Image (cartoon, rainbow, N blue to C red; front, side, top):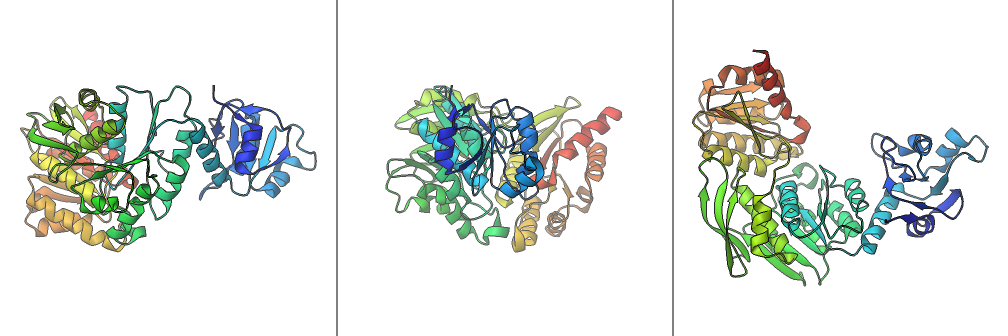
Length: 473
């Protein structure tokens, strides 16, 4: 069992022991007093909307073995009252508790010497992470981020779950601004880095697509010359990042010469694609039972991860074909027996919205195709034009009915009408209930509905309301 001794914690964080003895050990580390386990070390993180110092005593009363703090004055004022804290367990003071979390996670990563794969990109990070874990899982016991634990809190907490049974770690890295990927790379010290693509996401904070490229490129800089980077050769901004890298480069793509590619791509009768995966002079027929042409790229990138881990093409095929999509990522289900919903409401930016629209446009369903589109957030000054571009695209594709919800999505609605979409088949709604009532009224046997929007929009609420309406009726 992997443990952290008090001596290790003090050395790694350069902390000062305020209360307690110099002996003892902790089975794990937590930043959540609500779920902390007996004996665990609680780290009092200061966030934008909370301060973990408020919950130190709660954590200790629940059985935490100790706490790391940075605000000694607050702890003394609230809890000690001059009594010396005799009823409390170990208290360690550091300058920055978030930095302490990062230092402990990095120490833990170093002492368990297993390959670490880091994945970032504008789109497809989570799907690629899950698909890569499915491929690696054919041969290895895999640690991966759960849910959206891909930031400066979630990634170190994921690393801290690593134990002696794990053979590979596959970590998604998210970012909103410059320097975040660099920081996450310093914590995880990945051996293999994968960049899925670079598109128009986070423009509000980063300003230009070149800045997005540089921010994602921090991952490449974080890989040593003994490491491997996996790059999308069909994305010019991604492939530029190999310049100056001294380690091994594996490329994947469809339209450009690549180490790993897909040929003879055919659309499956129902949903998804069949293609021939070509890698290292070997071929394998892949049946990807998952909508969206862009998911072929996710499959190729997962194959590249498999190759970098020494997995053969037949096991890669098994891993890709056994992959199960995450909730709200092209998640397909039926209501009323023959109406298809594709819930892709986890997130959206211009690139992923475009991919989703094209996937719906070419989908083969007996009825009509409905798109319910919410706002794409964090686009800054580019927001209106980005939404208008999506409206023009919708009007040019095989989409029968458009329903938009939100403030910015009205520009999708306006531009779709200006570009020729029938006024009677486009609606702009102020809330989820309006959208659900329209769907309930319009949907017929054989129809398909795709739901898409940024995470902050919580577009899955439309699905829930439609289901509720259908049950009531």
